[in-house]
Length: 236
Image 1 (cartoon, rainbow, N blue to C red):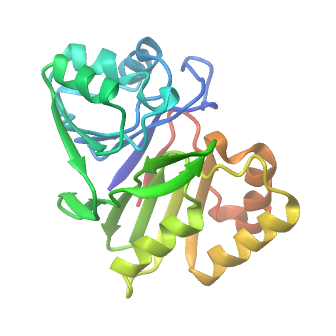
Image 2: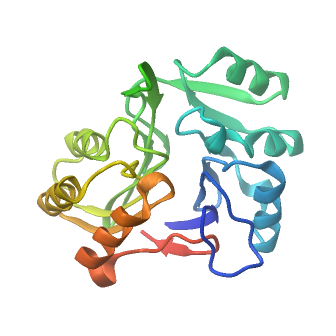
């Protein structure tokens, strides 16, 4: 299964738009998050020769602007099945329905396509409020891979939840936003040690992970660190 980076803060070359938020294409049929701006996402999609007609499902990790910004331009192009969560805002839900697309609200861990799963709702405390987030899980012969939006609930909390469903499988790849910008070196070192205990083979922290955290992981994982610039493709 291929993961292709359609939007992120970095890119493989200057022809791609970059910005806050991220967007990953999983195979040909599933889009995970949509970055901050529709025009930029659509132009990256065109530059990467991605066929929008083949995309069937859009999974939104959480309803923050930098993960939903490109969604509306896509829904104006065609109808999609959009996977959200029950605690997402009513404004977000109504806008999807007004654009004639189907909203699917998941609560628990479930399969959305063969061997591709959503964690369902994982709760986090964010700015004094409760926030719902979901991650995407891909099971292949290489192992289990996890793609995250921001990991507001904590990346370890998400991985331990996934592990509870795939007790016999190792983690092949874990990538996306890890939300580590405010973490100090001691906390980052602890996190890397925990990734080791969980036997995570490859990592790709990006977006809100912070450059210091990315460098920590890069030095630890060496050749198994994956830079997720726009245009990057990874087989999992």
